[in-house]
Length: 271
Length: 91
Image (tube, rainbow over all chains, first blue to last red; front, side, top):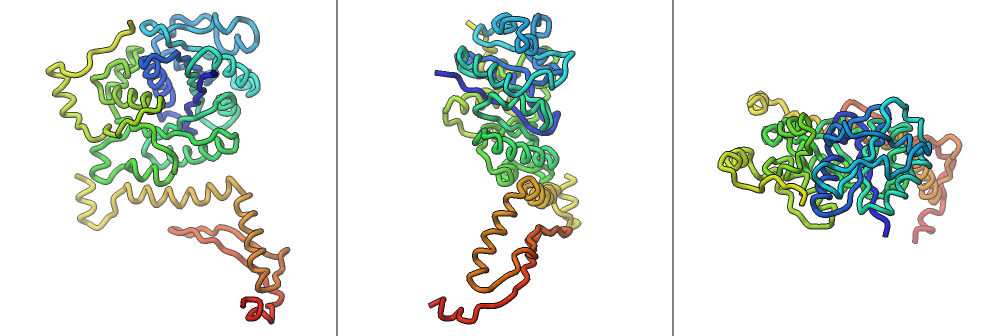
């Protein structure tokens, strides 16, 4: 059976698409699935850096599509997880270097071999976006609890519908419980009420994400962090598991305390 | 803290303001994204109204009108004639 092809998109830039792709993909790989991450942001390559694989790139997506190299040769295996791969994009080309049809064929080929094909979409709703969604059967919409990001998410949800990618899942990123509590940030219910799509995850605003990106290690590998747990929960929900939304219930204080005394899951390594 | 203080002075929580603004903006966004929506609404309106009166379909206008804090569906439908035997057709 062909694997699931999920595009991660948002409309607005800077809301965390790439981080989400990296972490959800890594989370699915931790759950034992065979996963490939596809960087569809041609010209603005970044997924490799978030994954810590930037030094291993030899070939890229555009070279594969143009027939200059075999798909297999362009895939980079993750350092710790041998069931997690990255197909990097080209850095010195432009979005129109590939067509939606070519992307559709490429993703179809990947779906033959992988359980999950996660496609990191560029910001915007132009050519690059259409490339990114071309082969996708499902979508994850990433937004932050801000007026601008939610508005753009709404637009993208409409476009996905027009392109026949149905029932996208929603990830609300960078929520700050303290600001929600004092009424200075849209809360989860507000965003769902407005966008009216299924919630798949809530990711708290967590400084550890920046640290993780600095190191090139997806934060989901560190289950002691709030964001890491949130991403693992998203992966489990995508797998069909019912996971209650406890992301906000647990205070950061408890986590800090836990980390201090070293309780909680140890960093998971691949076996 | 700022939130509590501003509420003391009668200012609305900024998240409320955000939600209301978003709602209004999206009414318009969604309508302009799909002119088909207004078009099919118009067709159904014609169908319903025609049961009761004869209208000038060519001159009919249906649009979303936006005020500062509300959005209204404004329909301008010129009536040519009202059907006389409405009472009978109804029963």
